[in-house]
Amino acid sequence: MKGRGDWIQTAMGRQFWPMDPRPDEVFIDDIAHALSMLCRFGGHCLRFYSVAEHCVLMSRAAPPPFKMWALLHDATEAYLVDVPRPLKPFLLGYGDAEDKIMRAISFRFNLHLGMPEIVKQLDRAILMDERLQNMTGTSFAWSTDDEPLGVQLQFWSPERARAEFLSTFEQLGGRP
Image (cartoon, rainbow, N blue to C red):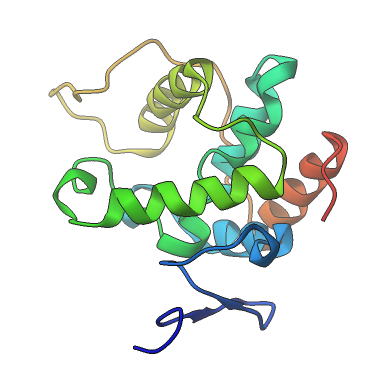
């Protein structure tokens, strides 16, 4: 590998170096498109439900100071994909790559560094809504069981999820 290493081409035709991310190479349209095409739970759910819809629903439920953070909390997955939670600790280097990319995203979109605890709490709570509305019922508990957030999943198409994500970003004062 020379220079910055291997890169990925985004849907908008840009280069992105996931192991050497730069804030000026992060674009909201790349993030919105990729997240709208990614299905939550590695696809192990009853209906297609995108990471983009998950982020929009979290943002709508978040208190005002945390809405943008909630919208962008999974933005790294636009470049790294949505790895199911039980797998992440076993993927050597994944956490470091995720941290580097989140730092670039945070600088690009003026988020303070470090995901706020309220966003982590909302993420655990919406997981219960997602489980109840889009997973096969089982008798066993998840390690993340908590009280549901109380949102209604919409099961948007990728096109709708992308549009809703970008619209939410703009409503929150984000600039491409």
